[in-house]
Length: 538
Image (cartoon, rainbow, N blue to C red; front, side, top):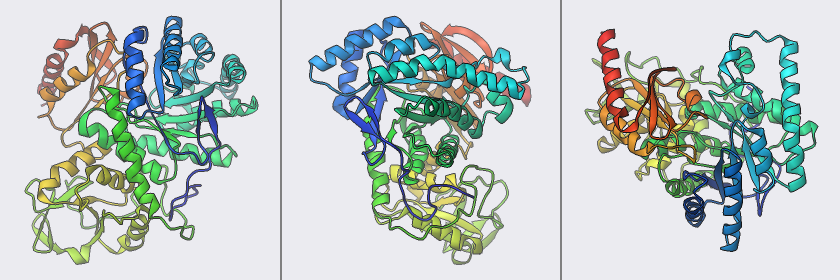
């Protein structure tokens, strides 16, 4: 498989430099950290205070919701007050739905974040339409015409753009042709990147966002390769959207973002955690630091062909002929009774039979001297001759480091499990669940919230987890608003979506089964619906 990023060693993707206010993103500049306020934008006092808190914590850019012209006016006041108080960090206006608001915001902030859906039809009413090649071309031309005023405004005011493509919110002509897939996400992005190139506008940063970390990784890798083939070098923003809360959200971000940083992809990042966004900053700092430790140990090696598809989860490079039926991949192996596979007296107990560790196991360890690409090379060279390929848990019990390197190897399906100390088994299982490859317990995704969220999402998310944590094989999404919520929770079994005020709707798959209920009663109602569904299906 062709991939512009080397298989055998670290090499940063050669992006060009984009000026965002007083900082530069891309090229050889450091990886910049950013976050987003979750206060109502028109509450200038609260949003100003949170901007300062984020900047003081280390957020180099701050994104603010811009729902309408009033929000743009509020952001202008915030910009002026920040400057007066000695804060020069760039502000980013987050715009959805309204090209008019994007135009207004581009005159007062250093960067505007838009979605292709701002300029194309993502309405489900067009889902049944069959697009001919001519129809498809006409839609792209309409998008070009629609976004041209924003490009011209950005040129005039020196404003950068971020084009944010979200899994689950693609134009239906894209879905019809490519499906709701990483390839569809890349097709959506490339339409607009080609427009920017045609207009000689390169002050653009691109992101491919999904709540599943591997969907995000495959889409971003494929985008990087596609840009490379087209001679494009746009900087890339990396992050797992709606990562969730607590350790699960941290692990999910580490698995996705860490994988790309180790691939040399990513010029700016955000760790999207539900709750106070200030808590995101130390996680992002630690994530970059841990990845750089792996990178600093790299030595350039001879370029190797990728022995498997880096853009897909469909192929397993390593085959597991000894793997017992009904055992999850990935699995935990230890002396703990909670482990999937028991290790005892230098033997692996596989159901009723025992096999020698030395004969059937390739073990790669995470240590202070680990080199991520060496691990990858070792597994692909030695793993073919063994029945099991397992990564050892971090000997220093650094769970973030474990999530980064195990995610990196799980993404390419190079390992089938993790060897842990008994006390660390559950931590590693949490990392595996965050990767999306295990669903033995309840899995949760929740958005980080922004100025569009009008109910106490973090509080409700904790209530939902408390009510449903005993359930097995279920994925639940808690979303703040209509912008990305419906698309990002499309693969969840159940979801909760903010409807304005303190009201939410409860979804089964993509069907609203209880509309506009008060948020304080939503967790209990959700549990009742789940239990009733399971009763009917048993």
